[in-house]
Length: 86
Image 1 (cartoon, helix red, strand yellow):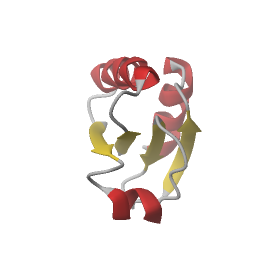
Image 2 (tube, rainbow, N blue to C red):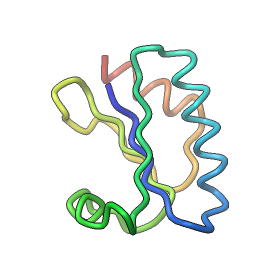
Image 3 (cartoon, rainbow, N blue to C red):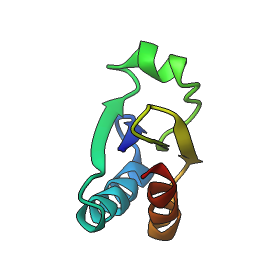
Image 4 (tube, helix red, strand yellow):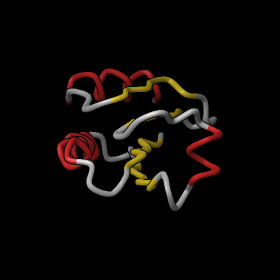
């Protein structure tokens, strides 16, 4: 399972989202956190329909999206989505 965080420079809420995802990864060791800056990974951001940062997308082992959050998700939201992705 992958937790992808789309970020941008000067994104204050991105810092809070990083903390949530770090805690989720600590609690769910099989979760891999990947961070992608929307400028550096512009094509990937466009392909995923990213409209704002932070945006978190959680995918299962097959790459299917099981959760998307624009803004800072709660730890509970991420953990529930991670359970669906396992």
